[in-house]
Image (cartoon, rainbow, N blue to C red; front, side):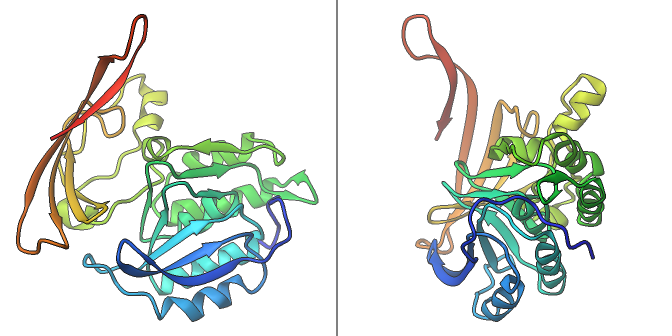
Length: 267
C-alpha cells in the first residue's frame, strides 16, 4: 500500500455522518481525508440504507488528503460496496476524486458537482510512484489507466484540474447503477475522440439516474456526453406504481442578439 500524500489545503479532520438526502439515509464524508477516516466511515456505513437498486450512497465533499488512508477506504468499499456521489455544489478533489470516488461500485457526479485531479506529491514534490499506484487502482476499478494517469501525471501538485459531470462521463470516470443489468458496454468518449478523432455513438442500453423525487432509467441516442437527445422513463417515489416518459433535446437556441448557447428542453 502506498502511503504518500496528496496536497490538500487545511488540517481539519474529515467529518463522517449519516444524513438524509432525497429522503434516504446516506453517509456523507466532508473535509480532508486523514488517518482514522476509514475507521469513522466503517462505523457509519452500517447505518445507511440501501437504495432500491441495491447500494447505499456515500456523498463526497472533500479536498483529498492522505493517499494511504484513501486506499484503505477503497479496500473498505471493495468489501462493502457503495454508490459514491459528488452531490450538487460539492467538490471532491485529489485523493477523494482519484481514489475514493473511483472505488464506488456505482459512481456519479451531480449537475453542479466537481471532481478535481492533480499529481500526487510528497512534501510538495511530484511523486511518480504514487501516481502510478493510483493509476493501477483505477484500472482495478474499471477505469482506463490513461483516464487517471494523464491527469495525475501532468497536473502539478499545486494545481487542480476540475471536471464537471460531463467531463467525468466523457473520460469514463462514472458508472451508473443499472449498467451491469442492461448490457451497457462502458465507453470513454473523450479518450476515443483523442485517439480516433471521432466521438463514438451512444450506448443503446439504459442506466439509472437520480431525480429529485425518485429515479429515472435513461438512454442517450447520440453520443454519451456531447449528446443531442436523451430518453427517460422515470418513477416518483411519491407516486408508486406509475411510470412517466421524458425526453431531453440539446441544440442551439438564440438567447439574444449576437448570442446563442446550448439549450435543453425537457417534456
